[in-house]
Image 1 (cartoon, rainbow, N blue to C red):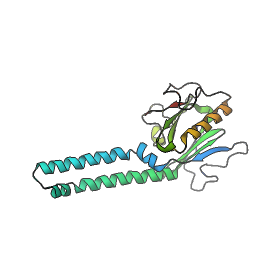
Image 2 (tube, helix red, strand yellow):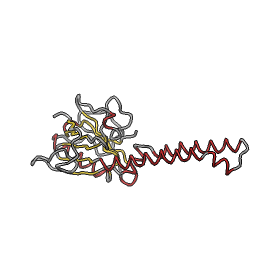
Image 3 (cartoon, rainbow, N blue to C red):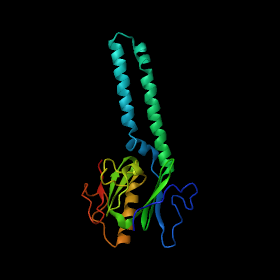
Image 4 (tube, one colour):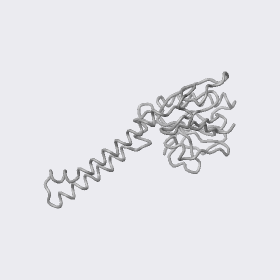
Length: 225
């Protein structure tokens, strides 16, 4: 069963987060969305962006002071940098909120479904049998990223997935459930569903192995980026 991209068909959803109603022999185990603050911090890197503009403003103020301007004049001279920084950070926060609002992750007993996209919504159906390895990257407040390494020749473009992709895995992109609440429980559900579907046991307990290579069975691992 190949990975299927259902296109932008979600203007009217027959079932929340899904391009069509599930067949009678398939059931939803979990459904959720990313936490927008987690997306902002770890996918859109708003903290690093804010720090960058803070350095620029500080550099501008220091330069003005060195040129003999008073503190008030030095701060005033950096006002446009500060405004640009606020607008940029605000825009990325807004994008993170929109991304989280438009995203629905679904785990069934047969597949993982990722409904993503703000303007053009697309759906990726990832059969459990197509998942070769999975990971758990713990984040703050019980949230986490769950990257999925795919088996076989099927690949999804990194650009089509972003920001729902493991960072810097460009040659072999890994679809990722980003900033998932209660991530340990969700990872355990996925592990159990994979085992039941494939008839194989997972290679190790969730988050107990440090970044092994992709294997024939899903070795759960922490996922440093």
